[in-house]
Length: 130
Image 1 (cartoon, helix red, strand yellow):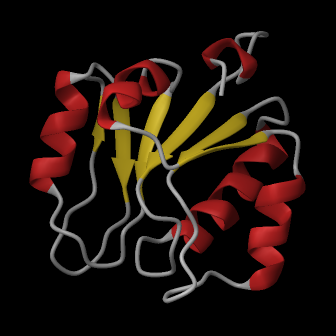
Image 2 (cartoon, helix red, strand yellow; image 1 turned 90 degrees about the vertical axis):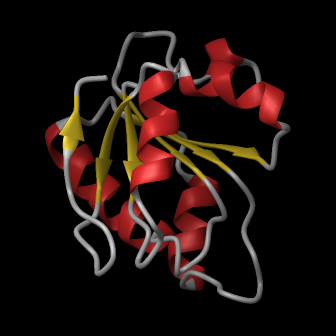
């Protein structure tokens, strides 16, 4: 994916890095992004990771993610590509249903990206300005 292909118009870009599964909260993120679009129709969603059959999100949600022009599926990428993709993000979402939170958030902060997380058991919710 060419980095400039995400949002050349300066619209906000919400990003996610991880497996696109139910446990990682990918469906919750899709629902939240739909709500965001009601207020910010020019927003974009950049998803870095792959779908997995072992823990799928609902088929209708996946179909919407794959068809909406404001959703950009980067797929699975190498670690060396992640910083460039994260530099495109206005905010990073961490919607995981159970994942340990602090180590992931500190890595994101070092890359200079704002982030938000879901309030889930084993994690805590916070908005960071990097």
